[in-house]
Length: 236
Image (cartoon, rainbow, N blue to C red; front, side, top):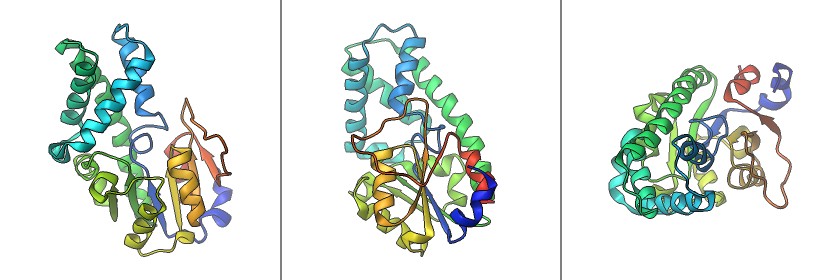
């Protein structure tokens, strides 16, 4: 994205909404892909289909456990990895710690960078997060300092509505006091973020990560970036 886009792309923009996982905590890298790398780096000989199975099993367990609502990043990831290892019938506390630590260290680096980005954007736009999460995305945003720049934080587990349901996007723009046409959505998921936001009338910016996943019939997005700092070049 180039600064020359500002006039035509951001001229009507009053609000920017972000996904959280894969967007604010990395440059478009899906959590599952990060775990593939972490298992391999730890020397754990686990087939990818098994990692995928236990990853989504842990995801579901976290969404259904109200105690997760209170967890910050590090306790959340320790819990998530513990559930994965239980699903694999593995008992290896040292490797559990290694995977959780590796995930969190990388995540915290991105959150620190994007904290500064959100602070600068917040001077010009209303900002929000819309995430399919475990009920504690607000906790993670507060813990990382992001919440001070956010005017709305929507968590699918808390709302009982998940992307790509357009209602969660409607709630978000209402909370920000703007119309869909005055908002931009930035996310890494083409199917859950880009397509429903676009259909609602929002501008869309796809954060295309290293292993992008496209739906069978992708619809056009307005812009593609590979890191959030690219957004700032045009937005400010």
